Image (cartoon, rainbow, N blue to C red; front, side, top):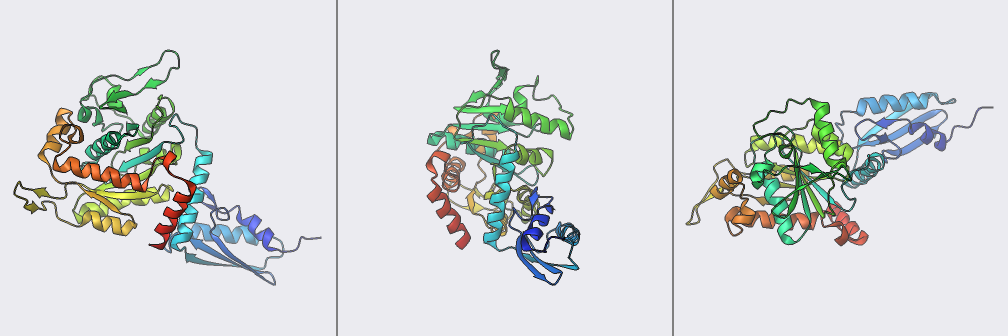
Length: 379
């Protein structure tokens, strides 16, 4: 005797429909908003992250096939709609939880807040932002690590003025981070012979190098780990979302609207990987003369436009400061050697804003997190 056609049977079948981008089924992700049974006709209401979801056709087709295979179903109707902001927030929380459950263990403490600094293209000053942001967090009193994940385009060692070598502890066989200006640092540039050595590694080797830095380095009890990503949306970025799914992204751009259009791609990659984008930083925003005149040499509005499009705050506009460029070449970060300079002051303010958005784990209560999410949803 065939089983009766029930909503429970429909939902059970829908657990076989996966969102290929988020890596979980449509039931767990909360995408099934309605199931209507009417004499063998099954109507499924699906809510997708966006109306133009590129996976829409695949999800709809998989839904029809799964439901049509159930005895007693004569026809399947799939009605899709776009999620509300609240529903998208809930979905991303589920996706991140799934990613954490499936992620391989790393040596990064679970209480460490990980901030991935990304950009759509090179040349926007992302690495100098990563260095000075990490140092600014450290100067406030937090324990900070800096991971140079730009495996073949590493520049962090020079910016920090260190030529120390990463060595392994004979007892644990774990790599020991190098200390520079009070923060823990790991970079490919601290392993190879010299900074002029070219690394001709392909995608799998890049991902493996990142995996080693997360699983075979004796990171201390850090409050924050700042990760300087390579520009773009390649293998390292995808590997990070898999290996360290608790990461949250800050996007660096310049005032140019052209740069903003490129930068939005890395934000889109983060969204597809269930990695929240928490803020935007605009670099090279303006040059200010000693008498207070400002010149916007690279245009204006790119950072604000990007932040508005992502619905996140613009937490800082870094001015053009000759000391910033000279300091990166000499290994003298402005946050340390010129803390009262124009760029250093903004970096300090940026660190303060970031601490508000991503407070240290020990300072963030469940009630506070809920309040912050509710405030974001109502804005």
